[in-house]
Image (cartoon, rainbow, N blue to C red):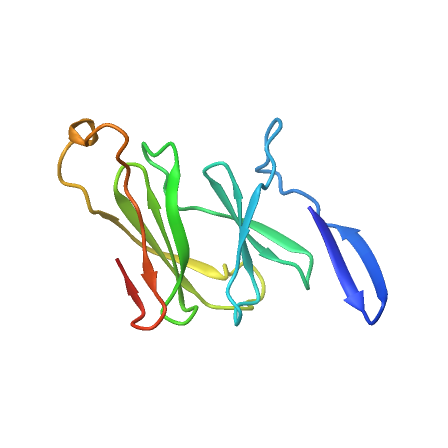
Length: 142
């Protein structure tokens, strides 16, 4: 991952090395952040990483993929204190966000994986998929 820093009119670039969990042609294709969070979430397919660009750190997040093959929605909630993601099995994964931590602690703490779909995914109408909406005004995950 390439990090670019601006100081006035001067730009400097540095590379953030991949963790050992990267395999084959895996790469981060999507980043998500929150205005008050020091970390970004990096997506490499269904593998997630907590990225702290200022310290040049990247760590995998164990969201307990299970049988999921895709992430259909995600985002920060509760004013950046939570990160949630919805997968294609209809399960909602919730992390608490702790901000900058030291040592072996993780900035994102796994809280729960809630199965929101009690039926079979095969009964969904053709072309349907699970979707996630996060209300910034009410701090609700819909």
